[in-house]
Length: 382
Image 1 (cartoon, rainbow, N blue to C red):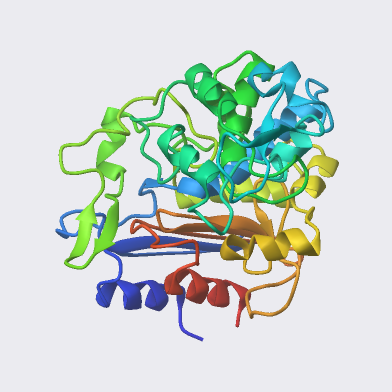
Image 2: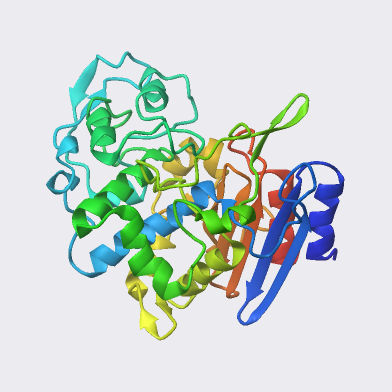
């Protein structure tokens, strides 16, 4: 079997990515590899503590924050979210997913916290991005790759959301992404703290995740890996040189993809899940909440309809759950997700494994990259 270092170096040498950091841990045995540079100019070598825009591997962290409030009895899984999010008190639903956004019917029931956690609230991305109601998620909510500056503050964002019809009735279909952003607002309103403050005090502090947050302090900016998108001419920096989107807290702290972090920080989060919610002598989540997060909640039909993103996987709370053995890395019970900035993070309760891959080139679509797939094979020992 090739080494983890060789795996990363192969992709760097091929010019696919400027650099990467990878971590595979089983219990106390932790293997870490770094390769390449933080930038295409080769001026800043990648390091174990390099900070990355982790994009959608933010989602499991957001789900954990919600479950902390559930454990405390401050919210309940099956309560209507209108109690905390009155903007969603009376949602409408397009009569057909292909139909115009003004041809709507009332929702047959209230949206619940559980609907948001399982991505079945009726908001989000289906396999067909051309549907009229989906277009509003981009134009009105600025859903898409993490760009903090253009997204309005939570109350304004929720007001815009209230004017967008659901694509499906609550509970009927799995739709990607938007529900995690709604959950971030829910955590803030239910806790009486800003979402960044809640995460910092309740999760990041106790877990020692000192480099995880929605911005990078000025003194640590040199550790932030540059971010690129592929073009016909190579890799183009995002944002353009001189941009400073991550220098201060954004108006809208995105629960779907707004965090920056390191491999060791996400490892600490993953270890807490493997320990059924306990870390450093403290219980952060109940074992039942961890079980709910890491259990598939979808029907076979919902998994099939979400195949553009899920590739046959199920969905727990905030992350996918492997349900088949169709692929060498697809071991039933593996929980985690991928991020559009080139990130991947999973746990495997059956083996006690945490596997984190951080790179800095944007994915070109929902399908995992070849590097991700090779990394998963390595982590699975295949």
